[in-house]
Image (cartoon, rainbow, N blue to C red; front, side, top):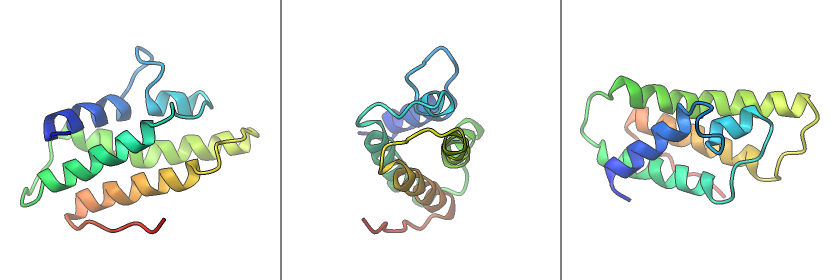
Length: 116
């Protein structure tokens, strides 16, 4: 995966509208689990983005917003689903935490290795 592909994927998954009902955030907001493999794709894209942005001092607004959405809104939707009694896949909580850690790493410029 190259930078351009990673950026497109993250923006698509992080700022998706109802036009893409299978997007990560749309599925979580609808209390549906992500499509199998989607979290892995998001994490790979985040790692590529981190590597590609080394030495950069700024992010474009669209990408920054998508990263924020992935880190914050996914956690909010997950928590709302729990309150609604949704039985999420067992590793989804940890996956959302990994996404947040990866976003933090991109914004801080320091990759944080994740246990597990």
